[in-house]
Length: 281
Image 1 (cartoon, rainbow, N blue to C red):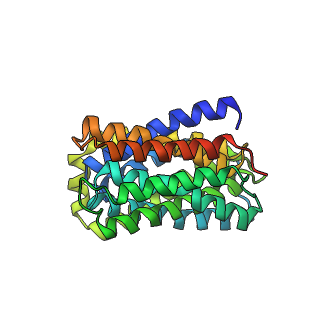
Image 2: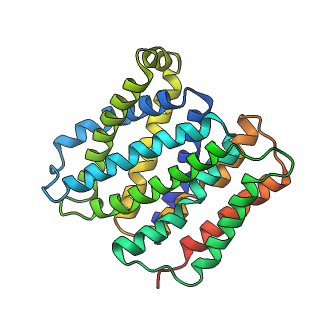
């Protein structure tokens, strides 16, 4: 991955972990819906300056919207019953495992042999986080929700990479997917939460605004990097945010800084860096 993309992806990872921490401290599903709405409103004027999606791009957008919705619903479920410092690394650290598989199936991108070492480190780190010997086993529903979220992220990463490489360019695809995703997920969340969603959004309006802006910047950088670099490398570099998430959980969410938790987060991050820095075969 080129140095500019790598630097921006590290910044995007920090922003990504930060808005996730905001979601964890707030109303979960409602904040996810609200922040999406903020991102959509900010991105909407861009639609007037970029090409409209072509007929070949719309199926990609529809599949992406379904995967994004599934990701957010799974994420909210994981954060409901697990600590941020455990759920986030599992949800994000597992992404490259699925991304490598999906990229191979969809685009025939084959991971380099050295990337298997990175994958092994990630698996060991995730196992350690799920079975922290100083705390109880992570809630099984939260564990599976986090893994499901990871599969959705990997899926939309492959789909979105295809979308950014359409003739209209990454800018058009990014603007359209952000706006449409914000509308679709807000409607789904409003149907699920009912009238309560409005009170929850008013109560958390500052967090919703900040999370929406951070999420918008992070996602736009991610799609830009996807448009010019191998999928597995970009996804892996982004998920180095697990270290930022661990630090945020300890510093701001009063979560325990056990040696096992810190060590497992570092192991996952090392595996991610290994995957990110190696070139596909």
